[in-house]
Image 1 (cartoon, rainbow, N blue to C red):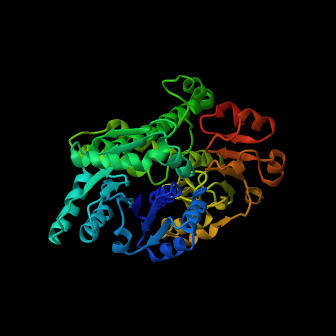
Image 2 (tube, rainbow, N blue to C red):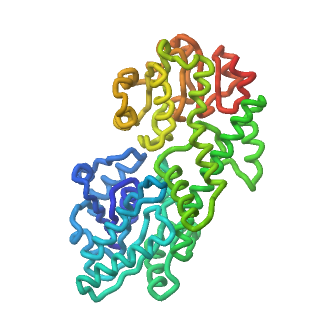
Image 3 (cartoon, rainbow, N blue to C red):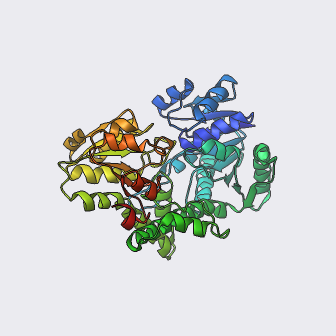
Length: 458
């Protein structure tokens, strides 16, 4: 098929590259000149394992191209995917300015009837707004054709997005219950046929339900995380081990093991934004989502758990202390620092006078950028954070090690070398990478999240 993907952000690039890999001819429309120049050279502007190789293959095969011009990008398109951002507004609602701007441009530039598919995470009813906006533009220019708008939300995890797209657990397609909708569904089934060869993964529903499904999925996953974090905090108080609890409840097939790991809270571009948007939608419709409001509150508080443990051990004045920090990105295999717990940890430590030596395999440059924004009111504090080239270099002379992101490089440290390198062998493990008993046996003072710390920390 001939496709146009509007927006070369995270979702747009993965969508464009994967569809091109399946033999479709894809034009990706991007207005940012710097990003466009990078992409035309086959350079991926974001870190996502496997994505750059797919981009380069698509370009070399002539199946993937990038443009900032509407008319050439749309000239042959049978299906147009919109994959632009929906940033949170001050009231928590999802901002639709980019989505509606795309709809306006489609109304002015579409050369023929085609299928428009929303990939962006959008509030219920957005497809109808897009359809009206595009139709208005077509009427104003006297175009004698119509368009159909469908919903096809993405369910991609940063760090494994290529695999998620190529081997999806479900493909949600929302279409209208009329002849246009049935034709749209036929097009989408044909496009996704290569992803359904093993078994049928398509879930067909009305457009509004498809839009709602994306929010509901993220809300459920975020709820599991906050639930386990609250239990972990209680486990610390009563002397239980949250990892043993996780295994005990996860073995129940009604519960399962996924997203039951206690830690320092969730971050990234999806969960925080989508929880806020869904609770806002509920309020606009006269309902309070009490569970989700609690999920968000628990997550905000969870980001301070590590620093609370640090202050409890070292006091509130940290001006004489240096801390090693392993992990900056909100999760492994990405450089995404949006809502990353590390930003909360760094903020609390630096404002308490501490010095920090941080390490992350990927996210250092992005960290520099976001911390400049976080500390716009006190830029001098950034002089007290530096960045090491290796995990062990970060811990040299440190009063304690704080682990925020569960990169594989941190999972099996040489404990003897760690003790010899640090000023004092204290570890605050925000991702429960290590077994408390083994750490205690090695002479390391260990503080996990809900890991029976009353007995293990010493």
